[in-house]
Length: 253
Length: 193
Image (cartoon, rainbow over all chains, first blue to last red; front, side, top):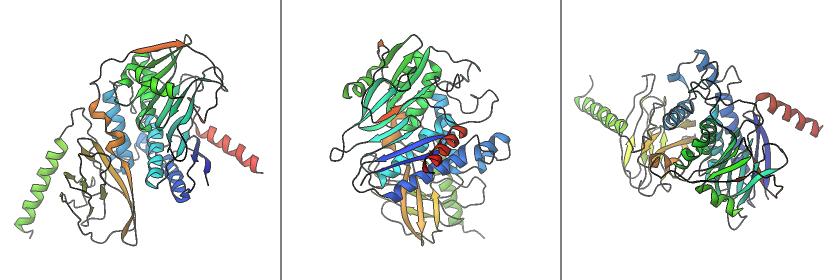
C-alpha cells in the first residue's frame, strides 16, 4: 500500500509520496500537522503569526517559541556564512523580519525526518519545487527530478537522480524579481535565471539556492564550498552552469 | 537557607555552561541558544555521528528529565529566558530516572557538539516518553564546520536545452503565497464537488 497526499500549506502545495508497502499513516499525518504548525508560527502573511508579531514589535524575541529561536539562529549562521547575502532581517524593502527563505526547507526536512524516524524507507516530499527524496533498493530506486526550464513550464532543462537527499531551486521566472540583495538594497547582482542546489539536507539546499541566486555566478562556487552540496544554474544568456559535484546527480539520471 | 553544597553546585553548573557555550567549533557552527525551556541534554557517543540518540526534555520549574544513550560526552542545559525556571545541568552515562513528566510535546535545548547541533522533540503521554523526534542531527546538518576548506570548484557549462523526459518530481522556483494556496485549494474543492 503506497500513499500519495497533497496538502496546501506554507503558501504552496506540498505533496508526500510514500512507496513503502506498509505506510505509517500516523507519521504522515504528523508530518502534515507539523507543516501547518510551522505555517501558523512563521507565516509573514498571517498577522497573528509569531514572525508577524516579532516584526510588529508586539512579541519580544525572548518570548518566542523555541522553533523561532532555532530558525533565527540558522538564519544568523547563514548571514555570516554568506557575508550578508542571505539576511532574514534585512532582505525585504520594508526591513521587516522575514525568515521565509529558510523556514520552508527547514520545515520540510524535519517533516521528512519524521517519516524516516517512523520507519518509512522510500518517499519523496515536494514542497513547491523544493524536494526531499529517499529511496530503498528493495522498494524503489532513485527518484528522477526534473529541473524546470525557465521558458517552458512543461519542459525540463536537465534531469537529476536523487537517492537520498534534497534538491531546491530558486529563481525569478515565476515571481518577477522577488529576491532582493540585502547588501545593495536593490536588484541582485547576477545574470542567473535559476539556481538549483542538491545536497543532504533541504534546510540548507533551499537556503543555499536562495543565497546563490542573490550572489550570482560566484554563488555557485560558494555553494560548492559546503561539503556535500552542489549547484546548477541557468543563465540569462541561455547557458547551463554547474559545479563539479553536481555531475554525479546529472550522470545518474 | 540554601545549603552551601547547593550553591557550590549552582556555581559549578554556571561555570560549566559558560565553558560549554564559549566552545566554538572550527567553522563557527554554534547554535546554542536559550530556548525558554529548562532541561538537560546528553549526547550519545559522539564519535559515531548519526547513530547517537539524545533526548532533552524540558519540563516545568524544578523538574528535569534526562534520557541518555551510549556514552555521554557532553551535556548542556539552557536556563529559562524568562528567568523563572530553575535549570539543572549535568552529564551522565547510563540512565537517569525522571521525575513527574508533564504530558505534551516539548522541544529540547539545542546542544552543540563538534559534529553539529543536536536537538530533539519529546512527546510525553501518561507521564512517559512516547516519542522522540530528532529536530537536528549532526549527520544531516553537521557540514557547517567543514566550510571553506575545499578548493574553488570548477564550473562546467553547456547550452540550455528544453527536454521532455520521464520524471518523478519537478524542481523549480514556484509562486508561493497564501493566495496561491487558497486558489489551488478551491480548485481541489471544486474537483471534489
